[in-house]
Image (cartoon, rainbow, N blue to C red; front, side, top):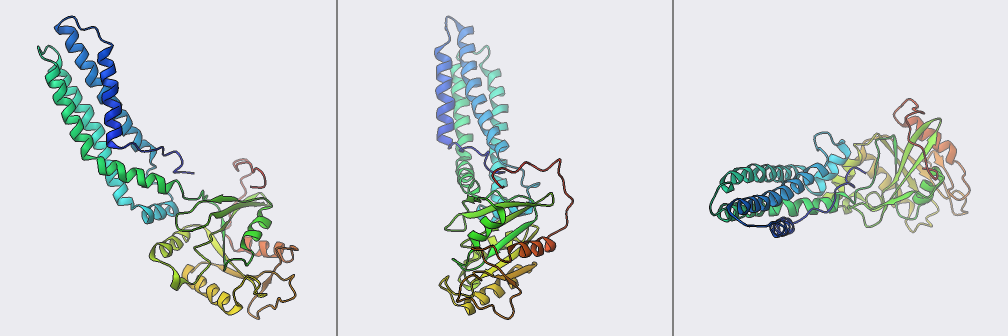
Length: 332
């Protein structure tokens, strides 16, 4: 996933401790027997500290993806979680600090060379370095918090997608497993209390993504907070359709009127193609509502192949890419 490569972001204190401790060790390895060697030792101390800091700060910038080229889906989620403008500002400040330390250290190298008291400009340089790192302390903390949140986003791919919605216990997870013929990946998601189920199915040389988002699409819109509504909006960025699953047997614990109301709310909120399907046709309590066209059973498999064909027919048309398609493993 795009944010997985972001490693732990060091704090300003950790950076300074690392740079200055290695700098001291560099000094300890030098034999000082005159003015020239003293200058060389102080120069080595400054270069060591400066290089460590500039390299580490530059690495922080490189770990984050370019938000200008990020997919709209992940851009929206990142904006909801941490604010893309704040992220860009902090990354620019870190970049500035890296470049400033690099140029300033080179300036002080010139002051150290040939100086009868080279430790004075070196200490002055260390003081300025400490101030620069201190000025980006809040930026490093923000980036560290952003990293922890962004790494929790699910690995949602740029593929034709079916989003499965509905109340708990209507059979959504069972349907994802049935459609993908495998145990789907369970990915953490910062807007939900449960993991998102993400599976993939292949048909006629094409790959399709199946997503169940518990906690986002399993209760009335009126009960959602602003963050959840924004997250639902982000899902619209995918080339997706919504499959709304209901349980007319009411064995899920919710009456059919409430389930249909939620289905209509989801249709109005998403404003993208959707299908309502009735699950648990194998149960004796099952009574198909008049408005429902698709009837299935995740227990017996009844109606699922027909439902899949109709879902695929509603998705954006793409050409098979047999040679470029990544191999599927364990049904994914």
